[in-house]
Length: 426
Ligand SMILES: Nc1nc2c(ncn2[C@@H]2O[C@H](COP(=O)(O)OP(=O)(O)OP(=O)(O)O)[C@@H](O)[C@H]2O)c(=O)[nH]1
Ligand SMILES: [K+]
Ligand SMILES: [Mg+2]
Image 1 (cartoon, rainbow, N blue to C red):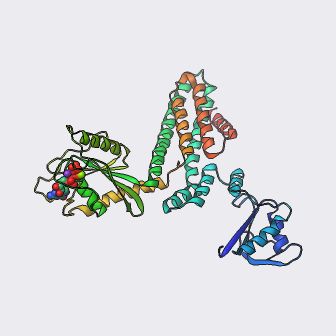
Image 2 (cartoon, rainbow, N blue to C red):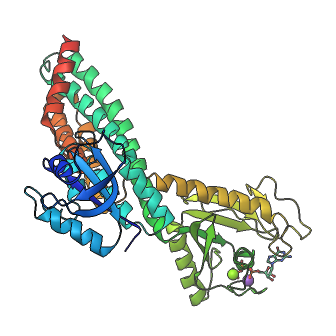
Image 3 (cartoon, rainbow, N blue to C red):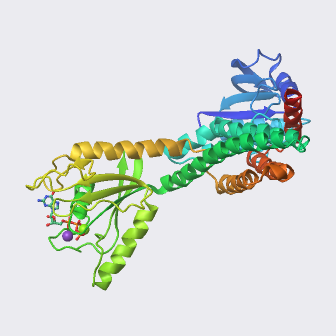
């Protein structure tokens, strides 16, 4: 039960139904108060608001009408009984309004999926991500990719006909390759963001790492504001991965303490701990690398996640770490410098979360199809001027992938583009 219930009609019979229940059709998209009456007996069923949306400028692209009723079961049931007895009306299937919107070109498949996600969204983050898709933000980016791809394909198709002019073919290939490299790099960025968007559902992973005894566990405890990890003066205290879940301005973060890394150890358990550290580093979204005056080793060169390097134990008399690459000096013991470091960490977390919210590819369906598309683009880009037909074939396969992504496989588009380029060329 709710204060207000909305019954929505879509399709050819929508407006005839409105007139038989309420009399004259109101002006489009204006809420008006009406008494809803049984079409035969004229008995009043309820009193509420009526809004009409003539197609094609409606959610489904068809004529749509909304009855805003009192929300009780009895009112809703009485209305539905009357409506289902009328010619040309039946109850909608799940998702049918959105499906019709897709069929009538009001939205593409990615936006339709966004509507579904929006209905199911449980967290603020899911809501934002779904809304971005439902409003067509993701579709717009994909549409940009598709346009570029079709234009490129058009150039190749046109050049095939002049294949005996070697210089034309060569110039085309160079231009096409430049366009393809650009498109591939944009799609790859989107794929990387897709992974981050997925990890954001559980929490961004921030990994604390460094040599033994630099104060990783002390820092974890300070950030978590509790004694989550054992701290001691003995190097190699932390053997296992310790995770603490936190929130940075609403963004879930998994803060991870790890075993200290050192080049060699005889201790088998420490060895296993270090292997685990390496795995954590490989899956980190952000690495906080910690050094201390007694051990200023920096992060391993092969790290490809974002890294913040801080030097701990600033309370100890030591040379300042200038020239080492450490960006912040802190003391996990006294709290000195923590505010600046924390702000920098939070800024990175929020930036990553913002990117993930506007991620274009979020479902595994999106990722699979986009990966296949990138492969076809790479295949096209690898062809030489002697094989323009093969290049065109790979591009058509990529265009087909793009069509599967948005639910629009449109040969006309390709033909249009070909003819357009044809005229410019000759
Ligand atoms: N003076 C000073 N000592 C610190 C600071 N942070 C940690 N320590 C000390 O450094 C020693 C090691 O701290 P831990 O937090 O256990 O260091 P860790 O990096 O987790 O060590 P492992 O787990 O063994 O790799 C302890 O004796 C801490 O009290 C600091 O900011 N200043
Ligand atoms: K220690
Ligand atoms: Mg430790």
